[in-house]
Image (cartoon, rainbow, N blue to C red):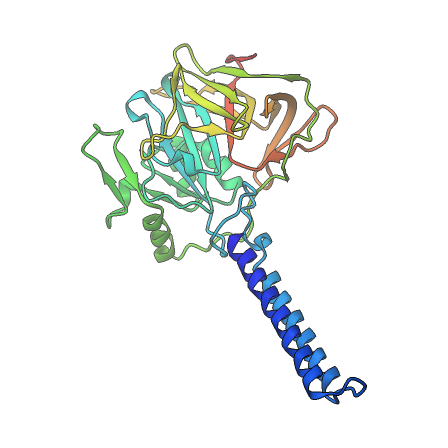
Length: 358
């Protein structure tokens, strides 16, 4: 914006100087009663220059640099491919790298009472992302609904059946060489696998994957416009008997600070505490897959109820999901909700989970 302001300021100064020089020339070359023969053409030329300069300034308008997912000003004119990365969220993997740069984040329960996080990157391409873990079909469904490429390391038998069917463009760290993924020495496997967005994008390009031209995004607003029923300052979301997350509203940042159990959830690279500008809680139906030796889950989020938390306000919602439209969310009046500009956390909570909003 500063660059645009300076460009306009310099342009205005030039125009004023041009007009002054033109007037001096007219007074010097023409008598008090005589009009210079070239005055009209010269003035028209100045006006034309002004119009061209105005059009050039408009072409650099910040409207051309707005992220559709967050509404924030971006600095890359060309939009990147949407990429979904499966992030390890077990105790040995926390804190993770670059969750603070994701536009959308989806957290859902896996086997053993732990959760996994799928981070969505579009305009922000971090230099280090991870730790990366295995695929689950319900995360793949969400990624597909966003027209995203999918990054993972291994997966459940159910996930591999979908990969064999060509369900979604993906990179599997187990079968991918060429230095795309790497392990660090500060943690034990499987909590130490990382990649860079640059490496992942180059790999997709090498494989000839076609960039998706369309993707899901939600209407954005600068302030809360959805119908809310009460205020809130804290929320506790229990996924299982031992795992829960907390969010506390920060009125200064106008965002919800995230805690894993009682500890602030921070970014490993910067030490900055993670937060949610929009916090969406979706209650879904979880079932343990029959005869699965690990107790893996299948999740039905085709429709249900939940909450949207924005700027200390609680908005009850209903939602539906399909592959073409991802999650469609409406308030009690049946109006589609609008998200505040900024990042969004989606918490997909089991029907037997516990949600405390205070």
